[in-house]
Structure formats: structure tokens, C-alpha cells
Length: 473
Image (cartoon, rainbow, N blue to C red; front, top):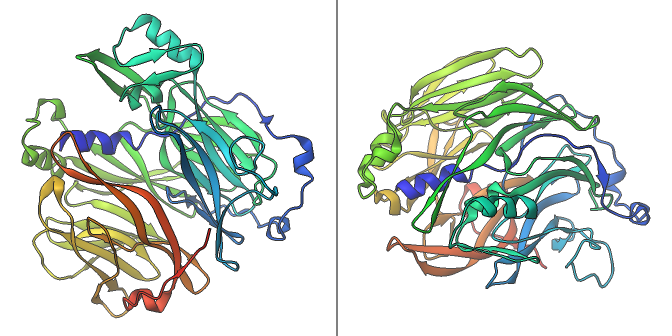
């Protein structure tokens, strides 16, 4: 559980700040290529903030996501492509309009960087007019500087390549990340901001009014020993604002122990966690110790108005009472597993209401809030190895819960989750290819090799009718 908690925390650190101007990384001849009809439509810039998603982003022209393609299994080398799901044609294709392109280098519009040791592009998002993404590359100088001062049996350094053996944290600490923009058809890749080596930003981030808001921190190597490397953050994280047009970065406020969990109008919503107990003092062999530690952390939900800089504490409690907060418009819902209820806070009025659901032992856990419905689930109670047992939909209008029965066929039990809306349908992943792996801890995990995207009518989803229409490659 300790390693699981560490992994979950490390996955939050994504990119960071310190602007260095702009640079066009594509030839000017590419900028004159044909653009899609949708790309010529200018969407009015809204002040309302929207949150990025690790899944990808939706525009009027379709859904975009990042796909990692493995080049060499032994070295971990790979490259990343921008993929486009076009609903009218039902095609899933790289975002490239060049005939006969192999999508293997930066002559391709869809290619956004090579990757070594698991570092690649981390997030793609949109303001409706442009696509934005973070590209992550290795800083060779930082790598060599680190190893000139720190010997380690886990690394091979040559003039051509640096190979870390099981050291994802070190590659984070010596990477450079940059913010790029591009047209919706993939042309005109332009570097807006380049960040210093090792600086990271938590995702999700918020975008609106021509600005991007995100939490900045720095990954630091805190120690080495017995062939292992410890990494951590500086503890001096802060909320920064990136002005897209001006290509500038401004520090707004300190954000120690905070993560962004939502956005509404001009508000950014944060979750802040604190505990007086050092997790390193807990028994690593006892899962119940870590569950008790997590459930009893102090948690606050805080809002920050990006126009007035006013900060408010909206909710206070233990993590078990304020779990998995999610927003949908002016409503923020969260799970109170202590009382076995969901609660919803109206961000306009401040009114907090309770939702009564079936009282089962292991849950409830919040999955998603959207379209006037709350999706939740229960697990089988096996702690760190727990799997989903059942999942349900609560309708805010009828105040009734209905069991959903759309599952991915897999070695584990996964619900078919909604990614986004396209017209009168939902974008979902009803199946995937996977490989089974026995971990060092003696557990079994399933690695996802390929996801199959599909559309399903909204009514079919809520009535558990698996009438999927798959995208074709």
C-alpha cells in the first residue's frame, strides 16, 4: 500500500514554469497546408475555466488524445502521436494530412516527440480554437551533471543515450518540459514556453480567458542507496498563470499540499491534505496502517477566484468524509464513506445536500458526475488488491439509483466509463487488449496494450444496452 500511495502521488507531478520565449519548430511551408473547415471557425474565448483531462480533449472537430508507440522494448524507447477520432467518418487516425507519412519523426504533424524511459508528452488540451500540449524531453546535460556527483549502479551513460534501469524518478528530475500550441488539423506547431529542467506541474490544469492555470513544483533527488533512488518535491509549489498570447508566466500563490480538483466560471477548486503522521514511520507490510493513515488525514476544499484573488474554504473534514470530489457545472459532489452517503455542494448558493443510496459495506466510491447523474461503485473489500464489485447511476431528478451493467471484458472488472460527449452519444472504451504480469509484490496486474474507442447512444448507456459503434483505424 505504501508503494501504491507513493505511485499515486508521483503520478500527480507533470510539468512546470520559467518561460524562455517562443520558437516555431515546423517549417513555414507546413503552415500553408490545407486546414480543416472546423479550424477556420473561431470559437469566442470564454472566461469560464475548463479542466484538462488525462484522457484527451474534445473540440467541434472531434476528440484528440496522445498515443505512445513503442520502438524498442529493451531500451524503453518510444514515440508519441496525436490521435484524432473523427465522429462523422468513425476513423481513428494520426493527426497528419501528409500522404504516405510513416509518422516516425517530426516531419509528421502528428509526431510530438520521442521518448526514453517512459518520458513523453503528458497532456493535451484545448480552448476550442487551438490544441495545446506538454512535450517532455530528456535534458542530457542535467543527467550527466547529476551522475558526475552521484554514482549509481542503475545507470549507463554514453554520448548517444542515457539508459536508466528502473529509475523513472531520475528521468523526471532531469527532463525538460515545454508548452506547445497548434492548429486543430495538427499544423503550425509552435513552442510557447520552455520550462527549466526537473520542474513539474500537477495535472489537471485549468484553461480559460486566454490563460492556463497550473501548480508548479520541482522534482528533487533526495537520496540513493542499495541500488534505489528516492525522489521528492521541493515543498515550495505554487499556482502559476500562463498568458497564452503574451507567452509569460506569473506566480500567483503558494500551494503546498494542494491539488487542483475542479473549475467553475472563474473559480479554481483545490483539495488540500495534511497529516501530522510521517508515512515513512508506518509499517510497510501492514495495509491497514496505510488505509487508516489515509482515511484520517485532514482535508479542506478551497476555492480561488482568478479575477479577484479571493480565497475561500468551502469544506473541512477527514479524507474519508471528503473523498473524490468532482464538479459538474455549479455542483461539486463527493463521497462521505464514514456516513455511507454522497454529498453535493452548490457552488453558487453554498447549500450542501445529501444523497441517500444503498448501504453496502465497501464503498461507495464516486466515479463521475455528468448530465444530471452521479455514477458510483462498490469494491470487493480486498484493500490494495480490491476490484470493482458493482456500479450504479443515481438520477438527481428522479432520486433513484439504477445498476449499470456495462463492463470491459478483462482479467479484472472494469466498468465502461464515459470519456466525453459527441452529439447524442458518449465516447467510451468498451474493450482493450492486455497482458497479465506478476509484480514484485506477488500481486497480478494487467497492462493495457491497446484501447478500442467507440460511440454509444446516451439512452443505451444508461439502460446498459451494449450497442457500440467502434472507430476504425
